[in-house]
Length: 114
Length: 112
Image (cartoon, rainbow over all chains, first blue to last red; front, side, top):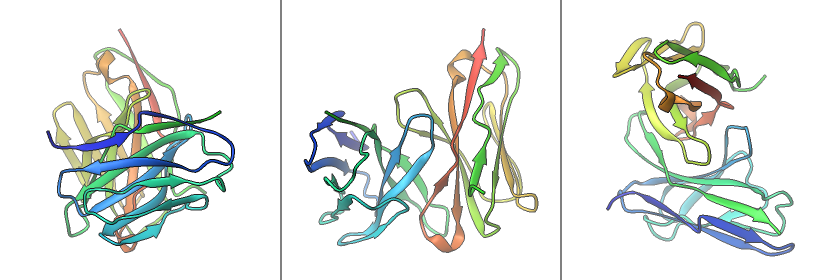
């Protein structure tokens, strides 16, 4: 069963706690992305990775960290430095070349602060 | 000015009518354009991609691109209640690699 999986579906964070969101894909896509979506708004890019062991900051990277040790996996850590973490977090991966890369999304993780 | 702008709606459309959604973008270097549909509480799913000026049709959906005027639109023909969702426009600037910039989305309500 191919696709992008994200876990957990819901995640609760306490004050001062770091939490890690999982993203796995078995589509053999090279590039992977993390977005944040706040209620009633579009998606904002947090981090992205085009190849293993390399990643770049997106538009709102402060308070987040990532790693890309395997092609299939791109976990996102929400650190205690992120003061407003409540949001819907979406992982995506892409395939294609020549500027026609198309991104596909996982089901998302909803992060709530206790 | 936002890089990608959409009317937030809601756009209310009678069942069977045509829904017309617009998206404008600010960067003339934009090369790739995408429409995603997002149901409430779910993740976005790709509807259409378009790269060249003109129209592109896929079933009941038609994307229209006008690079000179910097807008891309989506038409939904024979709108169904199941089309009720938020539609996100996404744009890739050529020099930015794989980065997509998203608009805020247009909420569409199809009334039976």
